[in-house]
Image 1 (cartoon, rainbow, N blue to C red):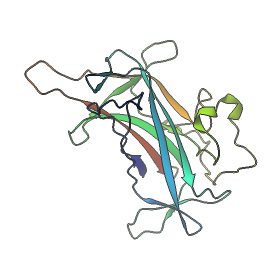
Image 2 (cartoon, helix red, strand yellow):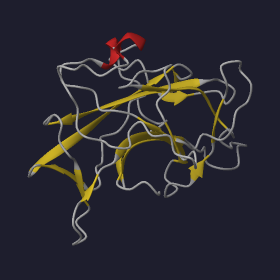
Image 3 (cartoon, rainbow, N blue to C red):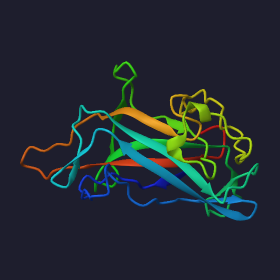
Image 4 (cartoon, rainbow, N blue to C red):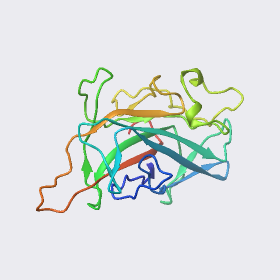
Length: 225
């Protein structure tokens, strides 16, 4: 089950003086994370990098431009070496969370979330496949800033052990989930070199269409998904 940040990139959002990149909307959470009888609140941190500019107070991106989205998340309170459970309020016993992952998707604004395909290019700028994988990602320890994480911080600090996530580093043979790449870090993932597969249609006879970007934090409660 996902914990969804309904972080839709609303292209009609006004470009405020303090906003250098398109902002995400407020997070929407589905389900409750429980640890030792305490509710744990996840906070998804997403930032759009590159590709977009403000044009007449509308966030604009040319279809052939690359853009990037940086993702990390935290858990509060932070309870070390503990098991996390997902309560979906469906009268079932809460399920233990085996791993956590993030994803990036796109939809047509105001369409009831009709999806739009995203394409990720390779580091050599060759066209890759449809962006569909969820990226396994560990929560950022308290007191650590997302911006300061790099390759030197790949291993989790022994002074701040994280929660127990048994399958966090296990590669899924179905490739629906992929371990976090060393190009990012253990606590941050960068979706880089992303393009919309199709431009928004606008031929003067139809209303201008806008796309939304949606980032999600997923709780995986079993091995077979």
